[in-house]
Length: 510
Image (cartoon, rainbow, N blue to C red):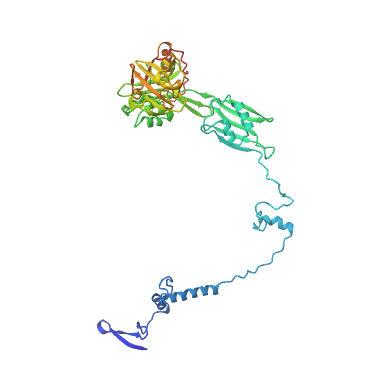
């Protein structure tokens, strides 16, 4: 039923279209709508929300419409489901017991068959079950010497028995007296053991005892025997020369100098000149111990020669030389110095400084004419530098006391010792033990009271660094110059045999 109409004239009044209004919905639609049903259904779905959010507007007309849609979809899914009846198939023939055992390991029956299917074949004429897993006839492994490690501990970690490790140490003790270098590989073969409660015997062990010696230990006739294989080693020092660019280190590394040699070179040169005064264009000269085995292995030793030739300023030629049993650096003229020796004569912390302080026993303020080092009772006390013992014994509040004269008006004192290890008139060297920490005299606990005297008066020990000067002379100076000439005649990077430093006995340096 239609209750109204509308006439809409077009421009010019040439034509018009008739629109009618639905008496129920009040929505106009064309009386002669030419659109298909799909288009009309899509427009209707846009106006009517069939799948609303059931979490919002609960109880509304739209909510109930969405609930009906949900139930309708669920019912359609259940109605169209294929069901759960078993699918029909052809009957399979039954297997007898032997056939079933033969194919059982290929079945997926972990629970029904005791979880053993798929792990081993069922017993047949060709396959029989084993009572226990057979052992490997031998085990080959590779171990390594760690830091602060020994050969015996490395073998024990690898599974070698204590008895075999002890035999190996007895066989190789003379070849590894100085110990093995950290990182040395050990090739080990462990043989078959007689029973499971016994360790495997060591059948083979091979390692590099030294750069020039390889050791191989084998079990022959039930006994371990050692085979030593000497390796030829070229001991020619390595010489690296070059021009300094942005830095000495980078330039020397680019030329192939080992890092260890460069670091030693910088320490030696820094004792002679300020490293900041070295500029691009200056030349460096490094000669270091270098051992090269025929197998290709290399060992870099100590720095032998440090040279620096600058465009402006004096050149430096420093040679390491052993004089009077002590190795130190000498200039080309034969003059050597040791600077900044021993800042502390005992291993411990400084507990009291130099100056006025309240005495812990006497109870009043007075001058503390030295510095105290707190250390464990019995710790060794070292001579600060070379000197002669001018006093050794009890010395009032100092307790057990030692005084050393070092020349040029300098002397050092060491007090409160528990035991004295230097006698009067004895000549001692820097680093030599002269006594042990104690608490004798006026002392509240074990410590070392260290004093420094200049022209008989105490001064702050931290304000002075000792410098020991030595001058080579006579035959030793001639041997020194010959050694310097040999090293400087080396060609860069080429092997040239150079005699080793064998200085003759000489008078002690002063």
